[in-house]
Length: 143
Image (cartoon, rainbow, N blue to C red; front, top):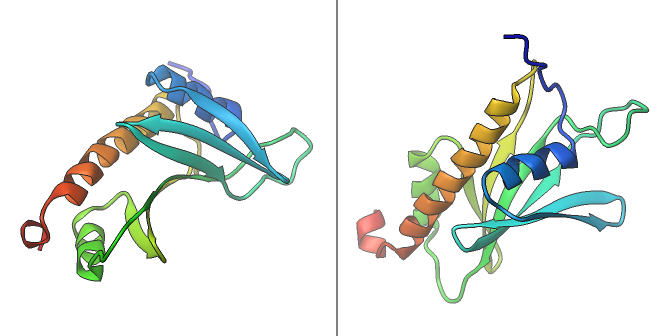
């Protein structure tokens, strides 16, 4: 099996992986930055690209981050944010003002397969499901 390894990420690769998972995905430009907008589990999310490779081959990046931003009303205990981060390995949760941000970094360091990239989308899907259950759980259950 001589599958070509992916050593960088492009918007087209991420869009393809999302579409293979059954998601709609759209590339949006914010000034010089490219962002992909999509949704899973009824939650909208974005994929933001990080470090651009310094080459002439176009928009190739070393990393990207899947992010789901939810506005919250009322109080959300910092202990619950800490609980998520303590109990889960792959995605971190942070509070920024009146928003909760769930974030998963994707890094193709050393070269990865297209199947690995699709698995990252599947992992994100599972994390969003778990995130919804986590948010719906009463504070006493989450502690």
